[in-house]
Length: 260
Ligand code: PGA
Image (cartoon, rainbow, N blue to C red; front, side, top):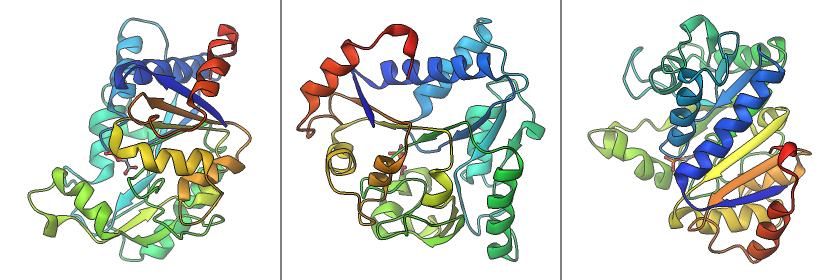
């Protein structure tokens, strides 16, 4: 995989936004898989700025969701559907018809998972999937020991993830225990995976994912199995990488036209 070390989160956001813009210029109807959480916000901000400045026309692009809480009432501001509409779809000037996600309010959650997994394939597959990483190494909500071949399904959050996400809710008790997440096998079907990690809190998870063995214990290590995976990290998140200097030199020597 390619590891790109950037000075800070803003630079990471700008770099990935440019990669998304370049993709949409090549393929205007691209299906863009987005992630929630704090990390990807600089990407969405930079991309919306490029769109406002006329740098790319995203009017035909489509947006799809990576994961969702189960059991929050429809329209809850912290449901990932609401978050993606607010942080991505609206700022890009798109409508809800450009958006697809799993139904976290479905009575039959299993059927909703299978329907979403199928819908992604029927939509032509995800062109670029943006990922964050949990402090426990999760991607999407694939917690440690998720099958590396898993499909979209219901998962139970670890206590650590619930605590990490409690800042979005009034209390820890309000954080749902269950989620729907694209499986690791589903995520690996996207044509390009771009993982962004910033801050020292992610340094261990990044080092294990990039330099450790492929292991279900560290779900993000599955990116090693993908032919086109890019990991963008700031200096703090890169601080535990043994090969940091090699990654810097490799990226510095890369021709600019190649993009991510
Ligand atoms: P964060 O979440 O960007 O808010 O740290 C990342 C994740 O849990 O995947």
